[in-house]
Length: 93
Image 1 (cartoon, rainbow, N blue to C red):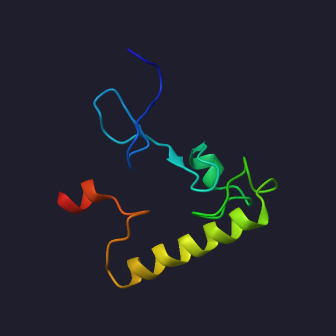
Image 2: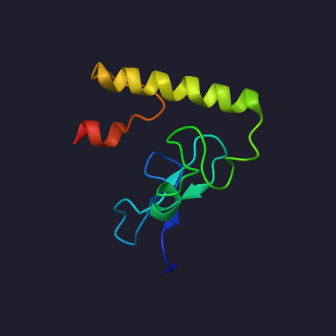
């Protein structure tokens, strides 16, 4: 048995021992795991940057992340799925 959450390669990001979703998310810019404390940081912008990468992202990467997040938000507002940011498991439940 492991301690803490286990990283998985799907939208859940991490799972607990009972395979329920863990507390971590993933920064879409740098792919680092982020917890509630990271998400509460002034340096966290959903889908764009996190405390681990906010000051080191190249402008091209930051711009691409902003555009991707814009498309995710537009799809969500239209109640339509978007391949990034869409949790297919929750939609099927």
